[in-house]
Image (cartoon, rainbow, N blue to C red; front, side, top):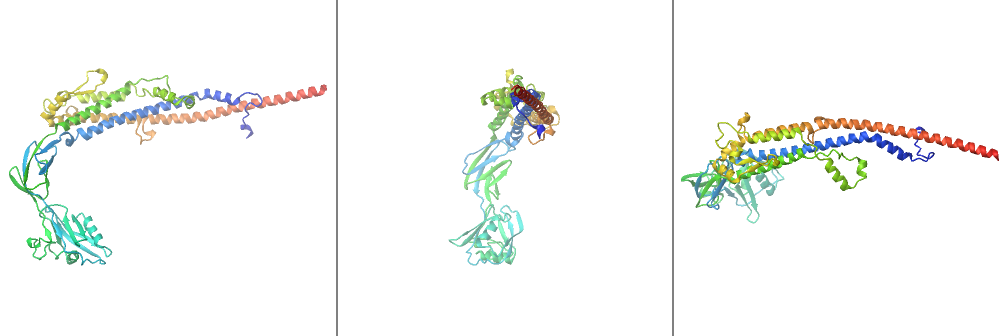
Length: 509
């Protein structure tokens, strides 16, 4: 312990503490440079990742909007009377006008019981039904277990929650009746009792039920007819005439040739008109141009940003001597230009420009729709704009109205041949390639430092910093040992001098 004792200038009167600190400042300078280098690498890593976020955002926009026919080739549908018929259309629907005369609206089958005074709990039983839906589809042997502890309410809850039954059930306490309604519409709907256990269960709920018969067949004649009307209201199919053709459907909503119609009112007619939704395609393309311009503007700004080499990252000691505002202004310059002239980003931008303006070839590409310029999208003539796109809105709208499918193919033509590949397919390939190269350089947030180039550099610098800090501790200890030895020597000299003076002056007396 004595060998590690630090004596701070008691004998010499010198400020040993400050002297050691000043000496260590000089020794620490290489360490500060390592930490500054580390900070620069971290800034570069973060700036690279922000560029990747921009590119990924552009790619997401392209995928969600320009590659999907449902986004690019939308149809506009108008009804002459929406209280009678409404409609929507998918991208494959033809531009046609359709007149629909609604004779009858589809309705759901309903069963009403006579009361639940005979319902019995306390018995465990399994009921079994064959279910026919309104469209004629069937599900046979649908079973539900009724437990001894089940009440009327819990039984109704089990009936409601069974998706295979496809019914809605409720009990009206005032009339004590149970009402069963099929969730789907259509004339074919029925519930068939499979056995005596099931028949007894429905009888307890107030229905007249027979094993092997349809629920609602009160007179056990094998059919539900007018004589059973007080127990079952039969489901009905929708009946309508479309452009002169009389037909039926089990539901009020159905699709014919890409147009989905919804019937709403009986005894009336409406005309449905389907046209191209020019605004939808225009807005999607304009959104792409705006997003592309935003991305290349930010990347170009990063590539051209001034690098202030006279403003290295601040050390902790330097920060302590500065105000927050001074630190902010300094670091604004210190962080500037981290990716100035970067080859990955420069190459990516050049490739993206080529992707946009290389002509799309192929037998399915329409003449006049093989380049962006032909549909009204050109490059800004101002070189300072860095290749931004400019839209001639009038021309673009005209071309969309003229042939929206040709524009879709211009953007999305599928081919392994670059010259025949659609513009956004090329662009997405370039974006993916550029993002991949940046990730190899700067990684992703979920990656470890070992997985990318800058991260491996950071590992190496951290190792150098650790070794240098260990070395600084040794140097500081050495300085203190030297000054402590000096202090002890001075102390001994002082003691000897005092002894001699005392001996000399003591002897003269």
